[in-house]
Image (cartoon, rainbow, N blue to C red; front, side, top):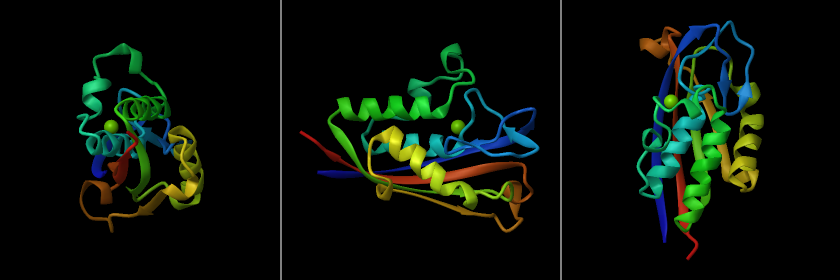
Length: 159
Ligand code: MG
């Protein structure tokens, strides 16, 4: 049996923060604000995976008031999500995602993001796809106030 999931996340820019997307530290005058490293792409993907398995969302496992997750790499959170899926009897078939940002430019980094995700989920790189687009200068993302990401995935039962 296969199941699908979706995830969406948005983080606002803040000065003095790193800009980490898909586990890649991208040079930029501003970073994303949040409790962890605020990796908007990995949060959308993690929510998609949890959703596909019917396991809720990231807020259930990584609450903002928990000091354990302060400043943590979201690759660690994604690995924990993968562990929960595996113990629930699921494996990831594939995942697709899009990062929506005016700046920085995302596309030069998507192959590295893909590698980071495939390594963390222990699935082949061709099972992961990361795309980038702008918001055509419309709305809060278009004004460069933050970055958004959407993800979708398919998982299947292993037992
Ligand atoms: Mg988030």
